[in-house]
Length: 133
Image (tube, rainbow, N blue to C red; front, side, top):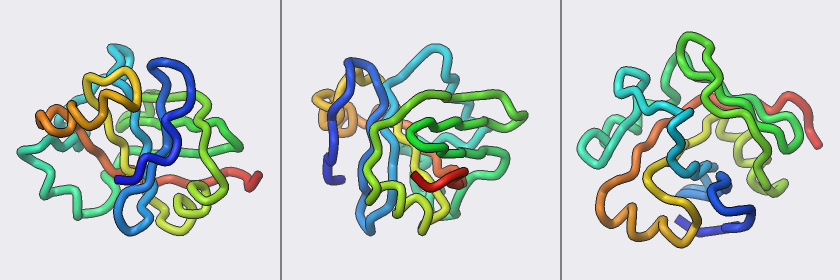
């Protein structure tokens, strides 16, 4: 993963690129954003299932800088601004999918340690851009 931003206040999500120019969003863990295994979340143990494409029932809509993510059952899982670049938006549009990455981290500086200790959770969701900015 190439860290492209790391900007934003403490505890805020940040956009990234995975290999193959795949857009990802890293979100620090938050008690208001449950990680329900039945919703499709993968860990180090279940990560091989990520190659199956976006998980059904989830949706992500990007309107300008505002990203809204719904989990199955239409409950809002995330609703907030992200500091994405045009390059990231273009990749999200082209891929039609967004990799969500979360774990016990509070900033970009925690990522390497949390990943190395196998404490990340991953989920691929479909994404659409409501308007082009």
